[in-house]
Picture 1: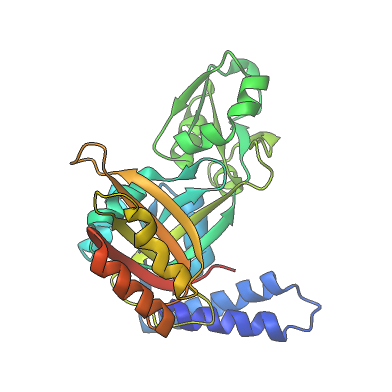
Picture 2 (picture 1 turned 45 degrees about the horizontal axis):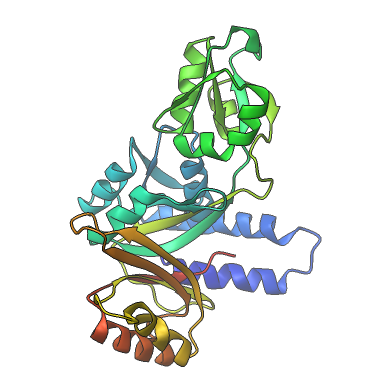
Length: 312
């Protein structure tokens, strides 16, 4: 599995496609061809947030194709552990949502993990309210992953303000609960509806029609440059005036475009922060390497999470 090579193939397909088949569908076909070819050597094991039917599983198939072995994990922590312990070659975890922002558990685990980011996947999130029979008069509780409940907060407040909302480990887990209990409805995606034989009561209940989640692929390998790359860092600034500005100023001076900047508390230290930065470019590019050398020399903490192909 070489994400940078596969990204280059898919980009060439986009450039050369004369139609009539739309480019996204053509790329999907080619991704499945590459997946089957990889499996002829040895099926790739990929850890994902289970059970089957989650958005993380959809992101995994979107990135790797279906000719893989999925390793079902009950938490984001377990995905990291599976890859670190060689129970899987790669893991797929959510890192940010366009409505709710960063997935804090993923960010915290990246700080101390030895794993690298090998690729990213962007997935449109379309939530539906589901029930075993579609009869909401029996329902006492709506279950979903906490992120899904938050992404549908406005709709739920308007239509079911008195209904109990219960967070669960994943939307697929909620779908399984709804399958077995007529007093429970769930929020999940299309794959969960098919897998657990649920009726869609209302489709598209997310508060933002453009709701998307970005996932990252975790592994132990480094990616070579591709046609378009992104690099992720974790930094801490010295405790002095202007230190954050001085820390990131080399990016601008060397013509490196920063696309994400977030902070997380340093839990072992009171009122100190780690900064999570994404920028366009690969560590092997001259201007990027010069900027990073300057940043590392003055950072109180420096960790490069990897360079990887930008999602299209």
